[in-house]
Image 1 (cartoon, rainbow, N blue to C red):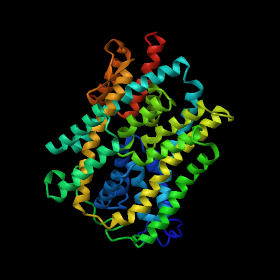
Image 2 (image 1 turned 90 degrees about the vertical axis):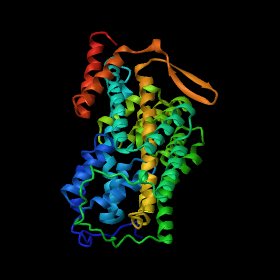
Image 3 (image 1 turned 180 degrees about the horizontal axis):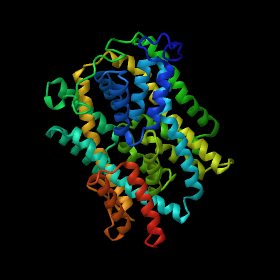
Image 4 (image 1 turned 45 degrees about the horizontal axis):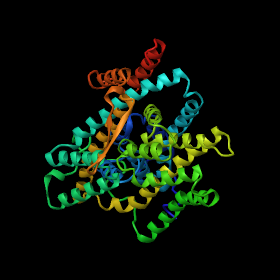
Length: 461
């Protein structure tokens, strides 16, 4: 039952990397996984490719390219993929599970504190400063990804088209991603050099003599019966709890709504937390009324300051949703269950995508059309992240916005008179610290939180 269960021992790994050693290394990766997907991928590359030499540069990039095409957090999926390459399904579960465990624990603890003390003035001041720093970090993400992805006019045009589509016309995010992927696929098939694969790490010389090697591992034997077996198991792990909640409580129950909504998010969260957060916020704030815009920013700030994927913010949203509609449960217990449920239906599909698709993807290494699709999608994601940075700015620097909806357009405009001077100055200070002085993310977040509390002490906010 390879792909569902695993009987691999340390002796039969075949590449000299024991399961115990892998556990220690993946735990180290998990505890160092701050800074969003770019930082997390860089940590994995440094440890697995450069330091341990477990996997070659080309194999690392091939796995990364596949994970970036998937919905969900690409860094967690990359860990799962490499863990699967090294130690089969057991290794994938260990690597992917350890990657999110510290974040689950940290976000849950912060959610308790937020729910209990979020309305206390100094806690509010702390998160006031946090939101300003998050805005600067999101802008940094636009610049960082843009420098790598927008290397020619076609890529710039794709990013601009994606931004216009999502910001001004509310085009669904999956439509943008699928369209970009098709354009990239067609461009690469036609031989256009603009769609050539992006390099990682500044075009460093690939590590060929890795411990895993370049040959196909013994357990990589793609077949339809194997795929059906793996797919059935992981679909059941994902959807049986969702179906059980719907049958037991109906559609109107908050737990059923959490299970359905975040299951849907698991299928459309291309591009990571930054790229999808605007859509999540729209639904969680305007449709379900689980949180308000400022709480969404607070939740992302929590995810920014803790290890693990930024998409862990969804655990906070699930916590707050159930906390405010606990039914017969205590609010804290309901919040705990809501947060864990959101996490389960968000990350279980990640294991499905890897264990189902990785055996087939391993046989496609070097496929130029697939690389072209990834290149175009990465460019489109820059435009989507730019949309998110503007959404953040509107809800951080301005206290009010107005909706423009005419001639097919649909977007938010700031009410200029509602500008929050303190938030604006904090955001400028955070951006200066990041871009001018190159300070680390945790330093900027900590300084912004301290500035927020100081502003409260002197009566500015």
